[in-house]
Image (tube, rainbow, N blue to C red; front, side, top):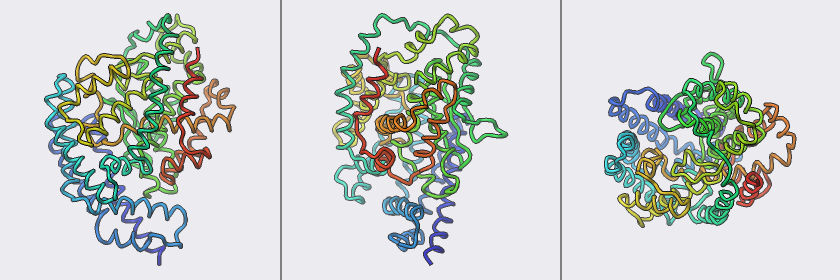
Length: 500
């Protein structure tokens, strides 16, 4: 009997999954090709999908099936995990008003479009009212969520909804440990590289050439974007992101411009793309393959960006390829000078242009502001000035305008609340996984210098990508490495990499 009820549950979930994939296709179109004037109708489309998904995942029959199947010993490990993931979401979603869910979805799309205009005009006031409304809706949602889950802090409840197992206090502890290391170590590194010449980073590279380099990086990472044979595409957007449109349709995007940053962002999005493509195809249309966690998602992308793309081993392989594709622009450089410049440390106002060493402080700033915003300690009106103050204190830089400050990211102007912490948690997780990968696969360095990324990619496919949501993030790290998450592996990794 349980088997039939489980099949019925999975059939119902498949319908939810299909609606999500339709939303993915619409998101791809919204970000890449949709006419700006179409946003009002597109917002209605998103709201409709959001409401239908909410209805399907919270209806009485769905809940009855989950209750019957919970703690059923006839289910195997995978089936039990699918039920657990669905029930975790159902117990929350069934008690959240559907009107609030739909209003949040529509307001996020409206705010996102206002943000695009405000950012282009360097005028925060254009988006401020929409942002205030969106924040109010999110705080309302998070407060209800906290009541449902019996958690005292609404922000902790929201983080737990996205990244199960993490809390505000826990993340604050990890981030404070990292911050106490990063601020002085960044200054030490800046002192060591003071006399180095990084002029080549400013050399212009035509967009047509950048496109070719991006495609070559994707090929090196075994991301097939050929329309006839592949499972991916590469699009152009204002803010790079990866969009899942189906189990064999995971698309990445790029913003062309600063050449070094384009290469870094490409390696980052490829992590998301490979993560999506290499999930276990036996579990298609099941929660274990479609549920995600910000920390785990960003662990995969930050890993491909820094542990692979930014590594000495990959760059020594790719350097002559890049020189050839750029038609002489960088022919005067030797590899050592190039690599020092490619990985140079420079405090910056932009998260997207941040180097690996300073990146964590960008995330810590966002986490601290978002935490205080949800706690009612600061207001929306104060965000620009508080943002600028923290950038001066932590990174020693002055923010020239709000487009390069509070409006640089799409997250708060969209649906990605309680998400930023995942980027840096992903760095911490990725460093611990990388330590384990290195200890079990020491040949990876030699292989990568020859252009063979299979050792590192296969490690991630086996231990991370194919696992999907079988484990919560902290449990996955402990399952793979045998240890609870610690900041020391992140610190040790950076000390080794930035030793001159």
